Length: 511
Image 1 (cartoon, one colour):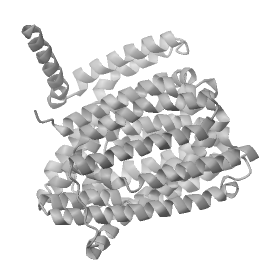
Image 2: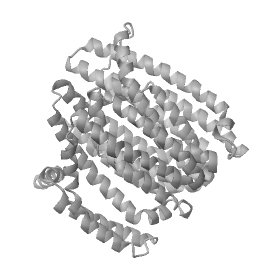
Image 3: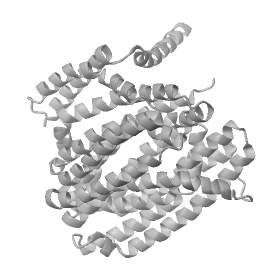
Image 4: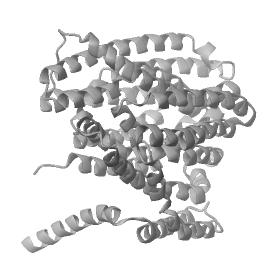
């Protein structure tokens, strides 16, 4: 029986995320306590610096998707082989450059991190940076294999491998932390695990997908075209790094590792939030590129954009309302009382980012149409504004000030300018999109009343937090079903339940 890769991929993604959240509930508190606040902050600080080297892939991963889709529609196998060869060479060279650049940074870590770090912290930061840079360098050539798997819509393999990594990681990291090897031991083990995962992807592409390479003909015309296309994606990557990683660096310079640790907990919650949205949209990326190549029908694209956006909003609105009413006691019980300051930071990051998250399939529509340049320039100026705000605010108000700078940039850039651009230039009907989102408004009335009532209890006791959190979840789900969801969305949930019940009934009859 043929598996529907898109649906199975989406289901497995959410299973993986659910599993990840459960594992994180147990793993993260242990890690925080075994590392300590200062070392956890140091790890976050170093990781944020190394993340900047990730932009050296120059956005070519997205370019691969665009050109592979074009050649696949044309059934041009020679062009695909040339494309694969070009990308493997490009990413291997870029990986080598990333390792060299990272090594230079590691040798100059005392200049980079400033005077707020102790001598021991600077020494450990240098080792952490070397290991993380090697990990990054190895991952670069494997971008072509990951992109090839995605382009062929083999989502089941991708998600299963991701789940295996998710399950294994805490079981190999925690013993290392218990033995006292700290953050260095943690990143060494994680790097080893990443190498195994990348090897599995390589093997799958070669053995299962019969991926072919041609290294003899380097298409210079195609390279120029890809470079122009990718340059604006590269600009977006720089912007993302400014928006999501510069805060940690600035806080480390002005306040030290403990402030970075608190911000790191908030950033981790924000990362989980981001993953919920991309889990749905990521499986539609090949479909978007195919739709644009074959028909480029704005009405069809708006319909897809709206359907995905509504699904994303349902899941995200549940998470951010849950955090509003239960987030502070949850952080206190989960991460520890020392990290309660992460709550306002998390909310400042999460609520503004909801707008771009329910519209992130629009980014792929822009890329497929080669209309992503405007977004890149707008985001560049917004990111520079974010940086200009973050430095003085972080210096004076710490993590909350840094988060305010990021929040303002997200609201202006995504809430106003990108909605106008998608509507006026890209051809998406944003008025229709927001009308469909606003139809959810009645579904929030009962859950908000319920949430406010729950806050009158002592939610810092775990039994009350779990009890009222579960009650709120049931009320939210029921209200969303009755007042928010349309027939299509209800059918998406009903159909799998009917299939499961049908299988159970069939097996019962066979017995």
